Amino acid sequence: MNYSRQREVILQTLKSNVVHPTAEYLYGVLKEKEPNISLATLYRNLNQLAENDIIKKIDGLESSSHYDHNTHEHYHFICEKCKRVYDISADVAPDVIRKTEESTGFLVKKHDIVFSGLCKDCLEQIKESN
Amino acid sequence: MNYSRQREVILQTLKSNVVHPTAEYLYGVLKEKEPNISLATLYRNLNQLAENDIIKKIDGLESSSHYDHNTHEHYHFICEKCKRVYDISADVAPDVIRKTEESTGFLVKKHDIVFSGLCKDCLEQIKESN
DNA sequence: TTATAAAATGAGAATTATTATTATTTTTGG
DNA sequence: CCAAAAATAATAATAATTCTCATTTTATAA
Image (cartoon, rainbow over all chains, first blue to last red; front, top):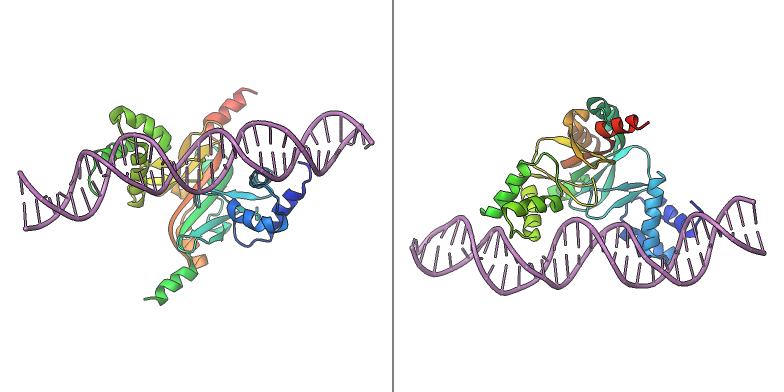
């Protein structure tokens, strides 16, 4: 992987982003720093960064993928109301890889847990409106 | 939900299917029993059945969704070599919903774990070829 | 039963997210 | 500095899924 200014900007933008953006959202933010960047360049780099375990691609949340600069083991929750994506501690499923490998004989290379439901903020909003 | 012959055939076909087919694959099988069925009808019904918790939609495996007639709590593994989808016992992550709800204050309505790697068959094939 | 409203269908157009193509530009190692 | 490899922008192409709409089927109840 050779250096490229565009890749650097993509990575920095993702790192300074608290949410777990889609390519679409990221593209909007990127355009401010790098107005001529192409959508193909964004996708190409996101895939490359994910293949090299520099970032993580999160699938199964919505129709489009989300991207996460946090590569430590953790999981994800999407609120069905506000659509925000939250990190969930890996502690909720201790030794899940080992247990799976032992019970199946398979080799687990990747895994993710995706939760959905209502986040705390939205639950409170619903209570208030009752 | 009113009765429809097409929905019945879709459900029966899915139930008699050991794999976890994509809409594409299912469509091919369905055409034998119901040659005039439309792809839109298939998607419409799969979504409806999933919304009513009669079947389960599995996302995050590949670019297309897979569908599962087994609605009991369990997880999924996709082999990166043969692309087969396997069921994984819910035992690998005991109390994962309760733990997540307690540590976040969120309400969890759905969750799935998606694993990927190499299945037993493919691991053995690789060993043999060495 | 039969009329009617609601639901479902098939066909194909439309949409969305993503990937592929290609001519040009940038990076890097000798 | 130069050639080869890698990356880019622009845009065409693709794949999966949803939408539209005219027609048919199903459920309801007079």
